[in-house]
Length: 273
Image (cartoon, rainbow, N blue to C red; front, side, top):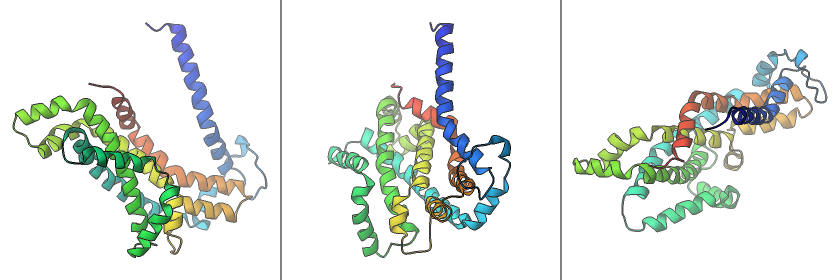
């Protein structure tokens, strides 16, 4: 049994960790609401009342089209990647087919390879197929990276929790597809939502791939717009802070909406049958 003193100590440590984690974000919020045009950083919460900074930044930084571009790319990647990751993880976990081990090893290798090592071949491939400087030049590689991790993630879940359910479904006459869609996918909903959150965060914040693939077009994602805006107004810290909050707002909203499912998915992945 956990003593009261240990419980209090645990809460104190969690509170300290939360303050350390939230400290920089609170600083950015105060900075974003400060007086625009001021040179230097001054965190004064009593003067953090300039909510008009966000409207100014939205207009001057042309964040509307950038947010829309990021939303189109990220949403497409999330939906397609989750849809492909579930059957891929199921196949690697519970089905026998030639080359399964070798293919899974290549999948893991794709997860371990840094993007910087593959960005030039990816760009050349996209240009060879006339897919550079458009949405697909970012969407297709991001789907590939996401599905590699997603299949690995879902395989771990199916290996731990699905064997007995699959055997029971097969005894009842269900085929592999029906077993997956009618029996296993409802149980895997927290893991699927966790994947969706992870994919959204990773792909929304991705900077290098869109920077390379969209360099010859007028398209830019939210992180690209933030860097461009920061370069033009490097000393206007109130506007830079407001631009940073605008850029991360969709990620925060998605995480808040799905945090319970995200937590359940993370915890379920650590509990064996």
